[in-house]
Amino acid sequence: MTSLKTKGGIDIPLDLATAVEADPKLLAMWQRLRPSCQREHVGSVLEAKRPETRRRRIVAVVKATVEWNDRHAPKTRRAGDERVPAILAELCGMGSERDRAGMARYGIRVDNAFGVSVYELRKLAKRLGTDHDLALALWATGNHEARLLACFVDDPAAGTAEQTETWAADFDSWDLCDQATTSLFDQTPHAWPKAAEWAAREAEWTKRAGFALMAGLAVHDKTAGDRAFLKLLPLIERGASDDRNFVKKAVNWALRNIGKRNRALHAAAVASARRILAAANERAGGARGGDPSCRAARWVATDAIRELTSEKVRARLPVAVIRTGPATRAKPAPRPDLGAPVDAFFAKQPPHLRAILDELRRLVLEAAPDAAAALKWGMPWFTVAGKMMCSLGAHKAHVNLILVGPADAFADPEGRLLGSSQGGRHLKLTSLDELPRAAVGKWLRVAAKVARGQGRAAVGSRTSSARSRSATASGRRSGAATQPAGSARALSGGRRPGARP
Image 1: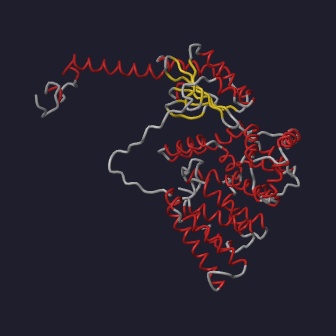
Image 2: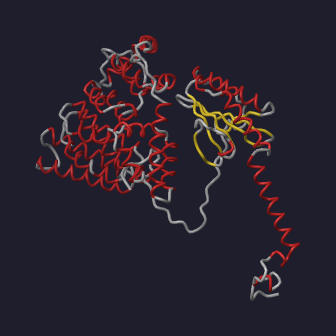
Image 3: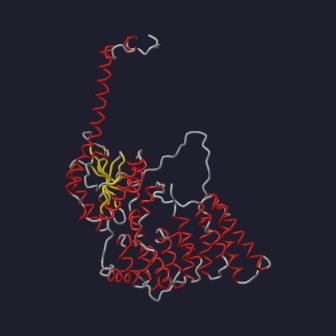
């Protein structure tokens, strides 16, 4: 197996990984695939038993990856410039002098800032959706809030190493540095090499970005092994003696986050902090005093040791549990909105998603006029005769139509549906123009039949049961006559040789 993994953390077979990594463009296309698509492609290769079948499937995976990227090409605009003036005007209206003064008190540059909270910026980013070109255009304005917004709307898969370097060179405050590294850069393929590279730089904000990136990876990269973080500890130990305030705080942040990841890294981080403290005291000739670098290292170490050895942190570390009996788990309480009407769900959606959801709702009721709708798991679920038929899900930049029924019940020659479990399939839509109304109508009618017990699942079960009953009755009627002539069982009256009468 290779180190290349899917977004879900599954190892990619060596021959498939070799084919994907042979072309950087193909690798970028693979990384843009949805986790479910990557999982299905890996499964199809692993299921092949013959070498030639495996090679054919790898070729098919490469072709499907290219075709998927062609169908889901990133949105292209003229650098997003037609939207930027309106967004800047909206940001200006959201700002306040009071918030600008508060930002200044916390050491944030406000000479080109409106005074908008990160909370409000994230709400605006959710409404705008993911858009790489818009992010580039917002960053180019130089406005503080526009650059923070760019970090929230950018597509990590579309970013390049050159972009991360350009943006890092523009950092002029700690909050912009931290949001860019922990909300965007740590999700890109360039995160790990940049963390090590920037930590060795001399420029204050770039060096802080390297350690902030380590802190973000410790929280967000769920697939990385302990060895990757252990390699960062020597960089942290070297950076601990930098007495610049924004650098030493980021070094401390990285050390603490690595130590809180799991029990093994906790022990390694505490040991690293103690080495930093011992080295600082040795250079200073004692536990007090010394030059600024000694005092900075001493603060980084003692603050990390104090937090990592606290009962609160230690209690949160994963603990191995030895089970002596069947695992039991308390049943979670039902959501307060379970069974509630669905109108409130549709009313709170942004306009670009509301249009898609309303049209899907119309198609559902057209396919099954008797369908009942209610909230379940925070989403509208449509049921027929008390059985689930379909559901609608709203996300940051797209809508999902979830169809309930056997995966092979929904004919999809154009490959629009995703997922292949026996529980159903789903259709992802980012705009109303993508909606294939005729196909959706057919899929919904199939889902309604399955819910009523008239679809392929019900028919298949009844047919197999009937065949089983018929075979059993036939066997009882014919007895030994059904056995091959001269067989041991026929000669023994239908019983196995040696069986008791």
